[in-house]
Image (cartoon, rainbow, N blue to C red; front, side, top):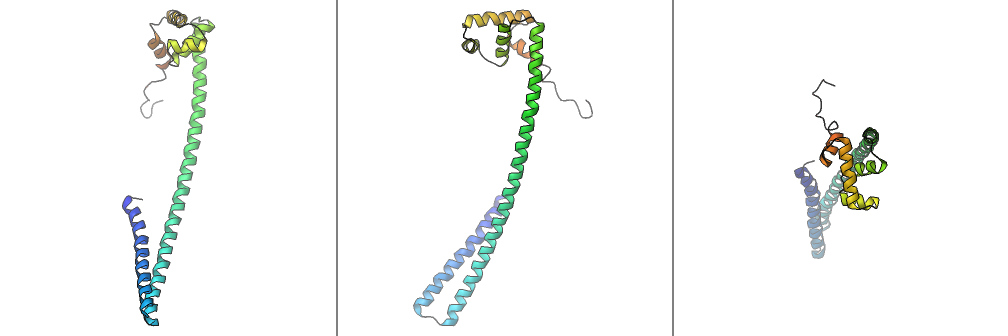
Length: 178
């Protein structure tokens, strides 16, 4: 629904209830002046009709709102299901990536400490953060990182990241091609 439609759905019941308030005020004034029963009925019948119309409009709006909420709930449930499916697929892909990284570290002949440093560097941690996590000195981590790069035949952290990410970031194949 557009804002104009929303405003119209609010404006009509508001106008009806404002008119009811005016008619009730006129009815009270007529009662205070001792108006005849006929004049009294001419004021109360429209009040009753307008009040009924206002209730019907608000009931209809509530019904539409409930349907909209149900539709949003369905969309939210679908989004949650899609997110759960994506997380599961991502976990499986990352598990495979983790295995591939470990196999490559093994091919490079990295020690367990060098593997850990290499993995933490791939995750984007600084030398200081790696040292803090491992309980070693920053200089030790720098030396281990240099050993990882040397054994891998790479120049540094950017090359290490590119080595593993290059094939993951391939452009999508054109339509109709695998």
